[in-house]
Length: 339
Image (tube, rainbow, N blue to C red):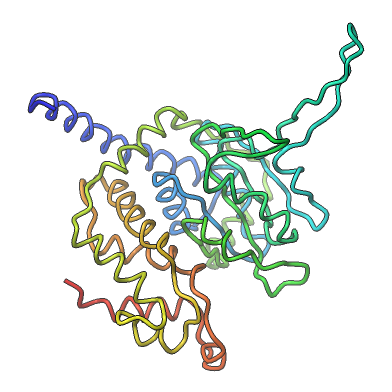
């Protein structure tokens, strides 16, 4: 590549970086028309969106998880589908099924594949843990490979493709824990908590009136894909990659790099996919600010969402009243001196 060509590419990337911040701000404005508060959750969704990663939202019913996702889909101008996960849901209800059709002219019967709701750009897997693991697993190939195998054929999913799943706390009746292999496919786990008093009053005011705000599309599929490619091109210094790998390895018991808190409280640590998402999430977070390069703080900022669903705590953690995010917070404190 000649120097003049490189300069053109760099100028184009700088333009795209400005466009990222503009798109993000417009998306925030559209979401705020319907959603009160939840700013950290919205930032997490935007970060995962740019990084082309799936998201798991965890919270009790009634916290607008579904409304948030459907509003985001409207603002993205993408094909949206919703799958309501229930105990009797079958894998074919997600991927699709074959039906027999008869040609009226010849009388010949043939099979035709009817595509399921997974064939969309934004798929809302609502209350994903209310269906048994067999059906949950129907999402695995789609989430990882962006394709679906059904009726002996493989069908590619149109990009961009996101699974945004909601999950009720597993302590609630009628829920099934998600398999670790499926959890690992989610880039982020975003917790949704109760609103503050003022926010709840605002919610009650908005939802009991006649106002129904209209959401306007902000970005097309083609432009979103271009912005995602830009995030991939954001340079990550080798030292930052080493820091991300260090955090992931520090969560795994039995290694020289294991953090003391992980050695004491963790049964299974984060796998290599966590290292990848720490770097990619840091790149996306930097791009949201219009920065051309991520920092250590970007890695630390995305670490709780990347690690929360990848660590399995032991009985000692339960006995001491430690939860996963407590362990992650202490793990990050132990890594504070990294240079």
